[in-house]
Length: 368
Image (tube, rainbow, N blue to C red; front, side, top):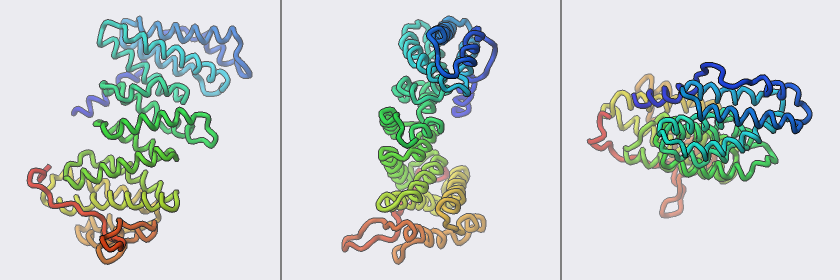
């Protein structure tokens, strides 16, 4: 119920209502400014931004705040790069001032409403140029502000822009990765953690890869301790790990292949050892993760076909499928052979061919 209410709170901020600011002049500038933006046109853009933000602050009703925000996004346009560059440059200056001004609003509810809408505005404008405005807000105590701040810096359009060869946004990329790396270990909202995971998996950067390994290690420990929650997050994490393992080579391929295997192994073990002990909802979540990753990553990305889904449906043979894919004490599994990794070395220096095991289910965890 809490998650549902959170989603409603977010959605309630994105519904259009009615016109708030005259857009005739700004629309005319956008339509004619194809080669350059004149001083007069710049003045129109500046006036539009400042009038719109003033309206947001002075609006007597929340609907007017939302509608004004939507107009600011709409007037960016998508067919005039020269205009958009100038428009976003003005946005950077004026939204920064607005964030500073919002702290002076006496009413806590109005102050929060404006901050939420300013953060959504940055996300909806989808520009790397604006990301510094919301980096600090990825740690906001307010879940709506935090959600949209993280969305602003991790959405696919941003990841694609930052990943372009020769991108001039290297400093922004570093700052974004620092922010998501700090957010990932402490984030409690699965929606937000999922955005971080998807972003880290889509950016070819050492810091992003370090974040994925760190998150994998954390999740593996949670499974080992029988304290894991939000198992569905591991679909995104496993897909990201598997994608890196498939695309990279050498030590990176081996490391990501191993982490994929270790995480998938403890998930399968939780399912196998939790039969008749874990509650139906927990078992259902585990089945969803196991089958989805089998179909989406093992089959389509790694081109490894297993009988895992069939074994779960028939309720027999899953242990055999587990060992074939992931290995046992006597032999390496198909995954380790293909991606050229092992699970470490024993005391004699011999490669370990079996993934780590989780202990027996604690009595206190049963039926959850």
